[in-house]
Length: 203
Ligand SMILES: Nc1nc2c(c(=O)[nH]1)N[C@H]1C(S)=C(S)[C@@H](COP(=O)(O)O)O[C@H]1N2
Ligand SMILES: [Mo]
Image 1 (spheres, helix red, strand yellow):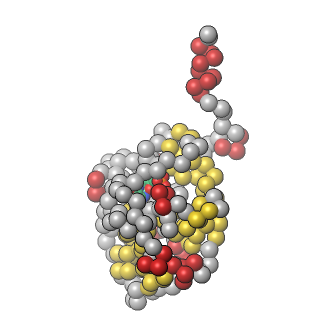
Image 2 (cartoon, protein in one colour):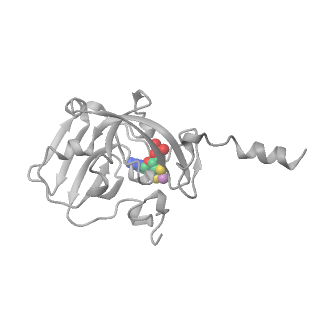
Image 3 (cartoon, rainbow, N blue to C red):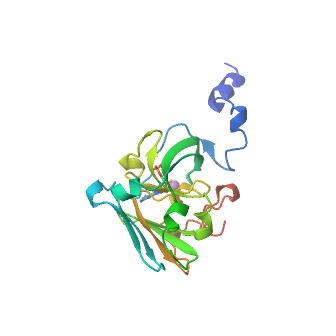
């Protein structure tokens, strides 16, 4: 068999015209949805679930699951990029924008630390979670978000590597000074822009 036969086969299909230019450097296009979790999947009953805004806020805020589900929500279509090199195009989510959440408190802070059931944390500048850049999502592809992928709710920050999209999120702590989260303290880049390949510290 000719080499051409094999290279065509291994190359897979060509990107559709509307997909060209959407895979950041060093990434490949994934069509499945890999699960990447640093620990076991928590299973918090919805009756015990809440979402909090804490830290440098005048009055901390807490929503129960029902109250959270009553917040204005939106459907979101975004490409996502994992530092382990897969990217997935046109993923569909449903949830509440971080703008909507932070509108409900008075705060004085420049960073947030997202915190999750199981102890995972990740840090972000406020500028990376406001102005329609981040959501707390509870729906994926028309279904409730599955536990493996972060259900009942996860952060979605699609313009940064996917480790910033904390699964099983329970709240945001607003802070003046940046504080490293779980992967950031283990050598991942503090910011994580996939288009700049900000994978590890020093990138
Ligand atoms: N709570 C929590 N959130 C997490 C992680 C984790 O281990 N725990 N892994 C992160 C990493 S490294 C990635 S790539 C994505 C993976 O999300 P997925 O399992 O839905 O693909 O979740 C991120 N959020
Ligand atoms: Mo990741």
